[in-house]
Image 1 (cartoon, rainbow, N blue to C red):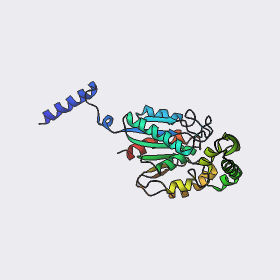
Image 2: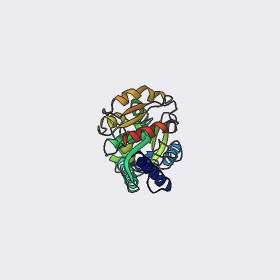
Image 3: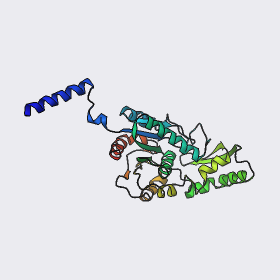
Length: 266
């Protein structure tokens, strides 16, 4: 009896080595993940190492260039950005992903939270989410630009590019050129990029890995606990605080993202 069992184990090992029988780990569901950069960023900057590392671990990855990138200047509205992420998820699914996650850094993290309240996915990874247009500082810095965009839309000039303003805590206020209609889609204080609303509207069935680096911008450090507490309760929803800066959060969180997504994919 024991001899037969040993012979069977030896046969299985030989087949694995030969590539005929795959080990259990390889038979687990494929994991696909969409990754979105932060404001004024790109797929080749602060999220690049994370995307490459996940791919090296066997993940199917879509590292997207989103409308808030340094090249695009809000050239599409929120609905179009949702469709872009949906298309990326469909592509990952077609490649074999059985479990799908959406991850974003900074403004990408906020958009990931917004997306998670409207679309069925297996989990959201929000890395140092920020850029809430409903915050006091955004209302103060961009209130005049929002009013200007509203006026241009009212005058029938919503699709004509205009010089407007954006804000980021590390750079202050700076000019952008975008259509007023697209601008309002992103900067309406009560719209999609209001973080409080986005988090309260999260699908309670979708877990969130909320990453708040210890060296984040002071404003984001101040609100991290209240923002996390605003999420619906889910057994897998977790606050993770790596020893990193705002920009270093994606790379510093690789191991935890691997661990958490694998747990959520079970």
